[in-house]
Length: 163
Length: 218
Image (cartoon, rainbow over all chains, first blue to last red; front, side):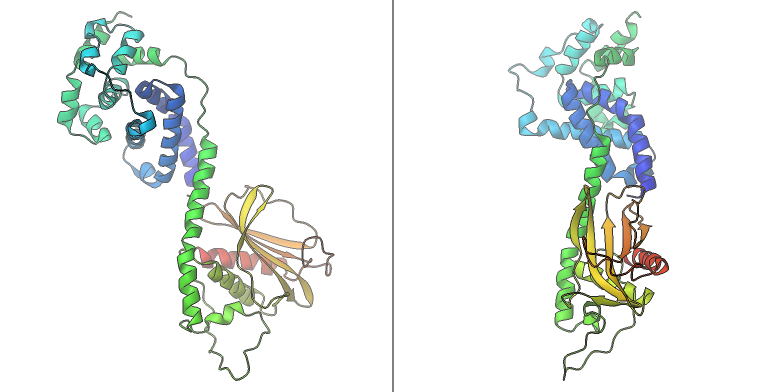
């Protein structure tokens, strides 16, 4: 990579790091793991800098790398989430109870990793259904079906939450 | 509103442990290692081609100036000097490029040393900075000394001070690494100067650096 490209890379990573860390934390709910994921993402973005810098939407490209890195890391044996006897759907808090951060934390923790990614991408980062589908490499219909598990209710409840 | 609740959940992030500079350094080294590892294939092919006479005048770059062909053996017609092809290259072809550069930029210069064969580039680390390094004795215009060519992956932005009796030149490569050429008036570290001036002039040193940078990575 040329020096000028590296400078551009550093500027971009410096400007994006905080958002990446926050997103990674929402996905994995652990700051150490979040920084691990962001570190891996930074390396991958460096390797693909030519593609990232030439992309129409750098942020979306980098976000796709981060999200997929998290999904891939979650599949590794030592990071696999513990299986539950009860299906995750049954443990999702009722949408009307999600009015504070603890309830939101419980809600996110109960979601399957890909569902969690859908929630974070759609409602934290504000990506559309189409963009979310493209970022995760899944069909729009899949995003919609996964979002039906209370996500729209969540958004409604959050929108109604008093300041 | 939604984002605000998410932000509340995130809270105040702890200090980042993401070492961006360290990641850049490691990736840069990994890329460089991959480039150099790729030269092994070229080295094998080149060695085989030279050994079986597949490259006209191929041995020309490996014989020190002044060396003669064995008696009774027909010496191949020397090929006109040409810059080596771009891309991954073997350690032997790098040495050959240095030999060609010296012949072109300092026609009267001769290699000197205990062995006839020119050394290949080897990995050296000085003050934590690694470089693929070629080092060999040279004599020009009656002056003896040492010629050092380095390809430095993580080169500091500023060149260090040049010791007395040394001419040095640096050429920045497109990938950010540096190619440096040094002509010293000493035949080795710790040895006394052979004379005041190094064998190659500053102009010749500059020309060699520019030639090698453009010939090896056009």
